[in-house]
Length: 392
Image 1: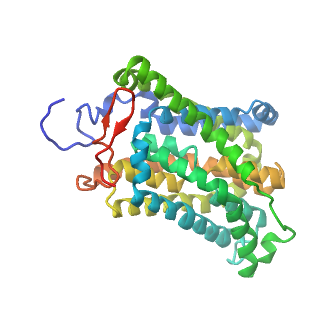
Image 2: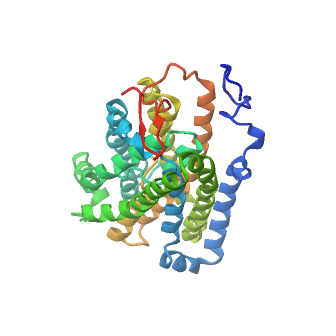
Image 3: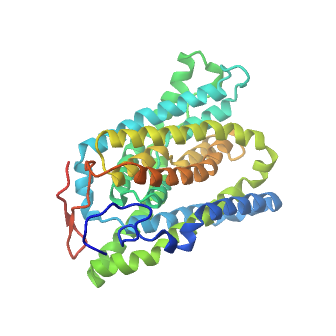
C-alpha cells in the first residue's frame, strides 16, 4: 500500500479498504445465504414439525449463538476496554438509548398495535406482553455479529454489551413490572394485564441467560487472545488466527437461523397474518432505534466504528432472555412466547439490511473530524495489552 494520503472508499483497492471484487464468497452473497437459511428452516419446521424436539433437547440454538459470538469476541483487544469504559460520553449515550429510549419506544409500539386503542387493530394482550418482554431485554448476543459485519468497533461493542449485561441483571424484572403491570392500568388499559399479578422474574434467571449467551463466548475470546498472543505473538494472532476463525461467525449465524426458523416453521406457515402483525412494530423499532442512535453517535462527534457499535447495540435486543422468560412464565405454546420467538426471525433480515445502510453511511459522510471514542491510535504491546491515546 502506498503511504500517500488519499480518499478511502468503495473504489479504493488499498490494503486498508480492500478490493470489493476479492470479497470472501460467504460475505459477498450473505443476503442470499440468510434468506436461503430462513427458507430451509421454515420448510424443515413445516414438513417435519417433530424436529423441534431434538433442537430443544440438544440445545442447538444455544450452541449456534455461542459459536456465532466467539470470533468477534476473540478479535477484541481487551487491553483497550479500560479506554472504552472511561468514555463517559459514549457510555452515557448508550445508557440513554438502551434503558430510556428503547424500552419506551417498544412500549409505545405495543400500545399502538396491540392495546385495542387504535381503530382496526384489536386488542391482543399476549402480543402486547411479548413486545414488552422483548423491548426490556437489551442485546447481548447477535449485535456482535451485525457490528462486525458493518465494520464497527469490536472493543466498543464488547464493552457496551458487558455494560448492558450487568445493568440488565438488576433491572430486567423491574422494567417488566413497570411497563407490563404498573403502567397499563394507569393509562386505562387494565385488560392487557387482567389476571396477572406478578411475573416472578428473578435476577438469577437473567444472570443464567447472560452467563450462557455472553459469559461462555466472552471467556473463550479472552482465553484465545491471552494464549494466542503469548504463544505465537500479536502479529500471528491478528493476521493468521483471526482470519481463520472469521468464517465461523457467518456459518454459525446461518446454522442458528435455520434452527430458529425450524422451531416455528409450522406456526409461521399456519399463522402468517400474526407473523406479519408482529413484524410491523418490530421492524419500526429496529429501524427507528438504529437511525436515532446512529444520529446521536454522530451528534457527539463519535468516529464511524464507535457510532456503528452504538447504533447496533441500541437497535438489537436480547431475544434469548425474552423467550426464556416468556416460556417460563406463560408456557411454550402461549401467544406471549410466540411473539418473542418471532422477534429474532424479524431481526435477522432487518438488521442485515441495516448493516448495508451503515456501510453506505460510512462512505456517504466525511468522518475525518469525528474522533470521539476513537481507539485507532492505541499502541498494542506484544502480550495483547494496549495503552490508548484516544479522546475521552
